[in-house]
Amino acid sequence: METVFKNISKIKYEGPKSRNPLAFKHYNPAEVVEGKTMREHLRFSVVYWHTFRNALSDQFGVGTAIRPWDDGSNSVANAENRARVAFEFIEKLGAPFYAFHDRDIAPEGRTLRETNKNLDAVVKVLKEEQKRTGIKLLWGTANLFTQPRFVHGAATSCNADVFAFAAAQVKKALEVTHELGGAGYVFWGGREGYSTLLNTNMKRELEHLAKFLHLAVDYKKKIGFKGQFYIEPKPKEPTKHQYDSDAAACLNFLREYDLLDDLKLNLETNHATLAGHTMQHELEVAGSAGALGSVDANTGDELLGWDTDQFPTSVYLTAQVMLTILKYGGFTTGGLNFDAKVRRESFEPVDLFHAHIGGMDAFARGLKIAAAIRKDGRLAEFVKQRYASWDSGLGAKIESGKSDFTELEAYMLKQGEVTTNVSGRQEFLENLINEFI
Ligand code: XUL
Ligand code: CO
Image (cartoon, rainbow, N blue to C red; front, side, top):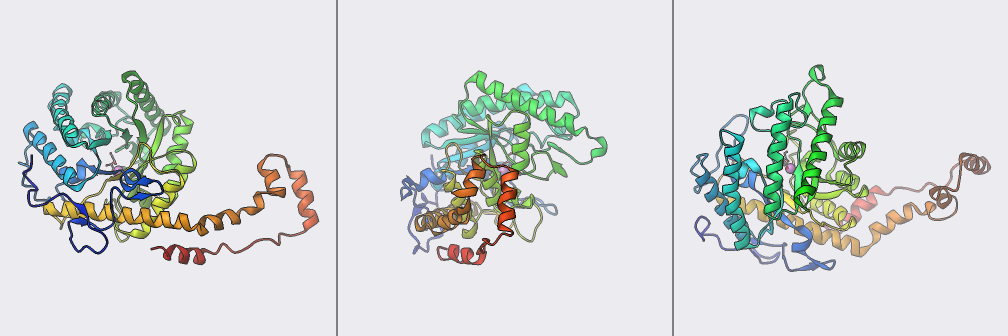
């Protein structure tokens, strides 16, 4: 099948000198970096919601997107056709994965039964297209935030019936993700938070969220779904305070409710920004806890304070992200999922190609730069040396639990003062990174 993008041929790697806007300059899928191909390292994924369902509206204006294949209706036939177009796009782009919310692939019906039937019809098409193209599902998820029933949240709603509806919806979403061979499943708590504490029993809501996730883990085991579960941190939007606000808060929640063995984190760059962190910080927090699962690869706008979900173009950012991902051993089940949309002004179908090519090239460069920094070794050596006082003598004794306050006091009383501090050399290190960019 080739219909919609007939004027665009398969996107190829042409190298850094190419001036073809519809070619990769850096993403060379078969090129080996640190023993793995770029394709294996980066595991790019196209998101269904932004790329095929986002009309590009904003707070002040209606959607601008021109999508000739979409008849604008909520019919199942339109959804099925859209699914085939989506695969044509992903195939031409050469991304190995995609991700979806249940409600962006198929329309909601009048009842849950009808909705499930709609979903089954589109899943059948997705299954055929996955088989035809070899494109795989990185993760599935359920939209538990758009429909008005979720006004007070889903698992954390004050209304037990809403919890039940959300459970039924996630049950079905897990079944279809399993059927499509999904490598993972994401929980993003769209409205799991609060707008005012005046009407909120926070403890009870958190317990319900934990209960919900435990029930999902139980069901996953019951159906034999082996994909990885992830929780996706975000501090605000749409609620004023989301419970899963950042990587540290998520890990604390998972630990408190005995869920740490079953969920890793799906970290999103723009969410890190909203939380007042860098993406590298979030990756480091997750990585050091053994919970770095997957990445929603986008970026925000420094001048706008909301979740703009832009495609990543900063090589400095991608180099830092890849440096941390490589440090923690690279992706296993996860990948770089473009949870990103084109700007409202970029309304033509070809813009979808430009945006993804740019993001893939930015990450391919980031990967190459990170690998070069690691090969050079000076950065890692600097960090190692910085902690050298812990490798022997008193430091090693403290780390191994063989010292106590009495000994440390005696040691310091003898020394009188600390005379061994050296510079952190931040500027030197920033210059070092720039040598590679
Ligand atoms: C919302 C967001 C979601 C999740 C999946 O900000 O990032 O699209 O990635 O529900
Ligand atoms: Co996301």
